[in-house]
Length: 119
View 1 (cartoon, rainbow, N blue to C red):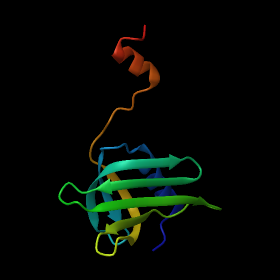
View 2 (cartoon, rainbow, N blue to C red; view 1 turned 180 degrees about the vertical axis):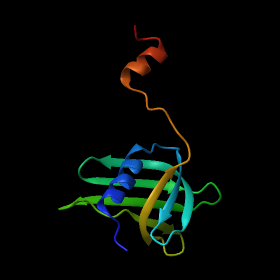
View 3 (cartoon, rainbow, N blue to C red; view 1 turned 90 degrees about the vertical axis):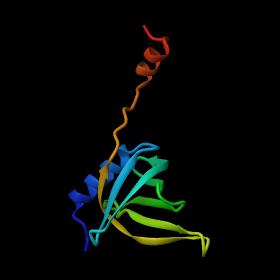
């Protein structure tokens, strides 16, 4: 099933706000869910978004990836690293994102104030 552009925009907006260490619940097109933690984030606005994730219960590694095409952001592909085959195996496309932790993003002025350098 192809997701609506509005729903895909909400998924991308949620992914763009995730930070390293943040826990997230992901929902797939078939309504299955998985909870993971962001371990690495690469975001190039207008080009590409890639998150690497891990499970708190296992050593498995996961990856979310999406690229911008002619019509905007494409589907978010979800893959799991297969240690047996030493490769990434695609699981399917993402349809929902639910952040489970919240983190405050500090702007440069906030960092100066916290470190005692600001005035």
